[in-house]
Length: 431
Image 1 (spheres, rainbow, N blue to C red):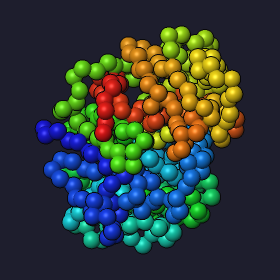
Image 2: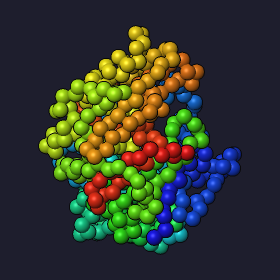
Image 3: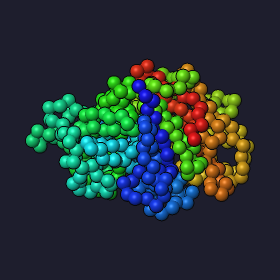
Image 4: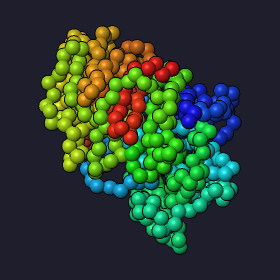
């Protein structure tokens, strides 16, 4: 099997279906490489309409992280079926966008990648309220609706049957959507996946509908991994580059071929309440050479309450439950030895003078992940403010989850080996 690599050109490549002034935005996919970019890239049709200041961008990302944490907390707090279209909290502001081709002949659409979701859906022609490029199912010779008797129809929220086709409705926040459960060929890079099941969005109301589709990399029954077991064998890895450069790039590799051989693993844990989430056993946190004093209950995995630690690609800044965060933060401050500490939004450990930061090490069962300063500090454009880029869960989120987020994952290769129920992490310069 050829190596399947999805190249993250997160700030250079225009994947909108309109003409761009920058020729680099029109680079086409080559071989088995599928280009992916950041949602706020200069070539992204979803970037902010006006440039944000550093402070504004940080506060906006914190707000988006907060809604995502609310979503993740709601997942583990109840038993739920696998959603085809998820709530806005998880899809409103996805970080990484992939260009996929759907149908025969193929139509190029944007889909957000998400490790904590099993969903697959795209806005379709005739959709009332959709604002992005639409999939024209009538132009595809391989498109077909999923029937009411199909097992997939039982795996979507609120399924209904108008005639023989399976549809579903979902209400969230100020929006609601109506979608048809559908199947068609989805092509990632040069890999065609016949009969892929997804939601074809027909109607949306409210102002929180995200413009692009969604491609879930979770472990549930309708995720990419489950629908491509023969092709990718439920194995993938990615390496996210640093936020420092607008021209950063990285890669997502699908399948067991060309995955790193020298990598340390920690076991994946499974929560029956939310089996798609990638839980791991975080045992301790070290700041510099000191293992901080964290109550065991703050790190313990408990399937009943949903507590524990997950790796998540959609949250930007790592959030820890309050006892764990406070213990880590206090030791960080003690080692920095700068008496004046300021705050910025949800970040409570900021400095207006240069600092020398200690490393922070997450100690998992079977592996340690030591984060250098680039993974734990954010700096203002002028360099006048530096903040510890982690926080406790917001006060209005009753979260029992510790979420290892994408800033702390940057310049690391994360290998999700689901058949062997393990997750590997190794340092790698993704650029």
